[in-house]
Amino acid sequence: MSRELPLWEVFVRAKNGLSHRHVGSVHAADARMAIEGARDVYTRRSEAVSLWVVPSSAITASDPGEAASLFEPAEDKVYRHPTFYVVPDSIKHI
Amino acid sequence: MTDPLHSARVASVMALGDDSLILGQRLGEWCGHAPTVELDLSIANLGLDLIGQAQLFLDHAGDLEGNGRDGDALAFHRDVYDFRNCLMVEQPNGDFGQTIVRQLLFSTWQRLLFEAMARLDDDRLAEIAAKAVKEVAYHERLASDWVIRLGDGTDESRRRVTEGLDWNWRFVGELFLVDAAEQPVIDAVLAVDRSALRPAWDATIDRVLDEARLDRPDAGRGVTGGRVGRHSEHLGHILSEMQFLQRAYPGASW
Image 1 (cartoon, rainbow over the protein chains, first blue to last red):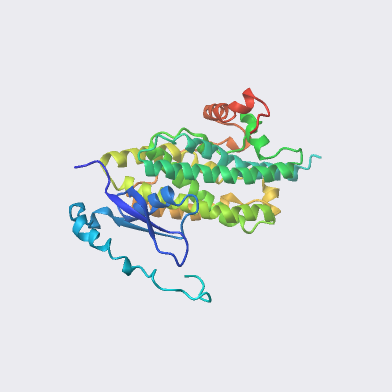
Image 2: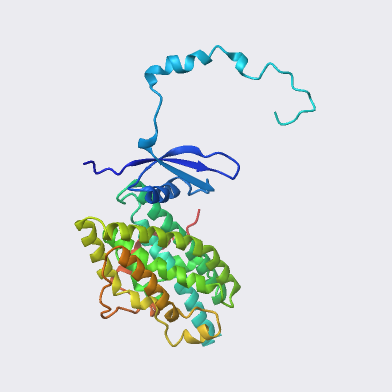
């Protein structure tokens, strides 16, 4: 058996209204210890109003070997960016 | 001016600052040595919280004293006999089990003390306590979680945390001790009657020990003296390290 505790991924929400963002990981025996570890490692400079921890084993990653078929087809489809519209001057915050 | 009530009041605030200062310094020794990087940061955070409290308490004590000493002067230019901290905080860290048990016993006491300080007729103390009680509530949570984990863990973790509990228990009585000099300060609602905190402390600690499947040690004979400047040999060693710079280069600043 490994002496290393299981790995947890840490997500921090910097303020209300924003999404949680992945910031790193901690080792912990259970969710409560993971929250405490994440609090002490990632929020000590008041970076957070909320924390999520997720067992790293629960995350399914895309296969790097399939990157070509998964992501490259999007590269030559610039028309999917809404950059061809003329935004009227009176419309702010876009 | 040697008003006994006033000097007892200064000593009482100084004791609050010295408790936080010395334990903060002690916990700093774990930096780079804790069992995991997460705990390394957790313990350093606790230590820094305590040193922040110490600064506020000692600045207040210095202002009350009125001799022009601020928190830094009190921290770095006093010798062993002038420190008013309890004996528990100056004890060596031992292993992580011993350190975390001390944190449970001390932080639970400090949380109850700071909650009670909200009712004092000293606005500045009440404000410091209101800020610090949030920090200390987390210290207590972290320490109880670990004591429960280790007590109800492996044979080795259980043995270590039991030894830590036995070692630290002799210093518990002093936390609740009030001497005759401080009684008028308490009567004037300028200090908390710590002896009244014991039942709530016992109830909280018993709950944690129960969940950790640990036995409460026998009361035994406690050790006291810190509040009147009678310290163990360990305090001198802490001070020689903490005060090194000011002893070697008096008045140095950056």
